[in-house]
Amino acid sequence: MFGTAKQKAQNEQLDHVGQLLVRAGADNEAAFETAAASPFLYTRLRARIAAAESAQPTGADEGWLALLAVARRAVPAMTAVAALVFTLMLWLASGNAPTTATGFGDEAYYGGDAGVEQAVLADAQNLSRDEVLAIVVAREAQGRR
Amino acid sequence: MHPSDEPTDDALVSATCAGDEAAFAQLFERHRRRVARTAARFFSRPEQIEEIVQESFTKAYFALPNFAGAHAASFAAWLAQITVNACYDELRRAQRRPEQQLDDLSAAETHALTAQLRAADARPDVEATLIARDLAGKLLARLSAEDRLVLTLLDAEGLSVAEIAKLMGWSTPKVKVRAHRARAHLRRVLRKYI
Image 1: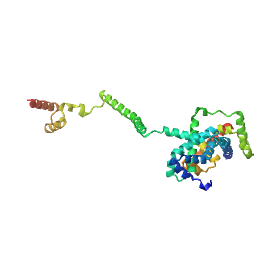
Image 2: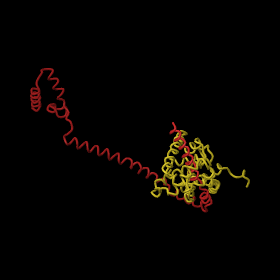
Image 3: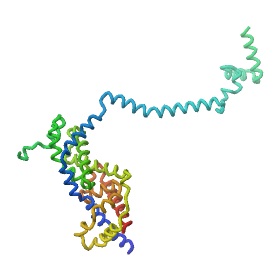
Image 4: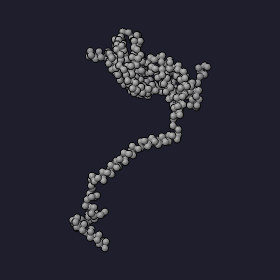
């Protein structure tokens, strides 16, 4: 408790010195008088305003600047998308992509609607895959004739 | 000319917006000392103060159409807001400059500070004279721009928390928290040398 009271008193003392320091740092009367009475201050201000006005972009420039600003934002995004697509293409081409039943399974042998045909045949006669294949080949041969 | 015959600030603002350069010159002459005095609270060199005066009036010039249309505040209050913000920006810029890296206090300065603290209760009248201005500058430069701004507005300008909040566009709790932290920071700075 004594320690806390002592600490509090010390803080108050430091705050007091701090306030005096802030006031001393803000007491720049001589510099203020010099600056406020400075000659040609308005002339320099007008020159500064004129320079700022001439530096402002014109209407035509604004269009180009807006376009550049959009491009600046769009280029990284487009680059990221292109890199993603390229990586995806490489990955698919390398053969590491997971195979699907419809893509590289037995169904590849049966043509476009082999699944339907197989199901119909399987329901009707309960044939094996080899038998179904033989029937399909025979039908194709018939069709060619 | 009788004071009542002089055009009001609002009339001069309208005239400036209509292209009357003399009206802007009149506004400048009317408010330049007030702006310089605010800048002198934060900066000790005349060229720094002049820079703030020019920066504030340049910003005000380009923002005059906004003031004429939308502000209920007086021109002086609006200009004070611009000036304090210009000072704040300059304090932040100054902290980033390499030449702003601080020297330690000399033995004489540390001794003066210690004597100051010991005498704080006994001789309040002479305290201010004991603290050299460059010592104050060196110590205050160790604060962040935000801390210095709040403490200067509170202790040197004598503004209330509500006035600072209005001036800076901050909430009242933000000003209170910032002031509390700033005082704690200044205490830590002072403890290092005492």
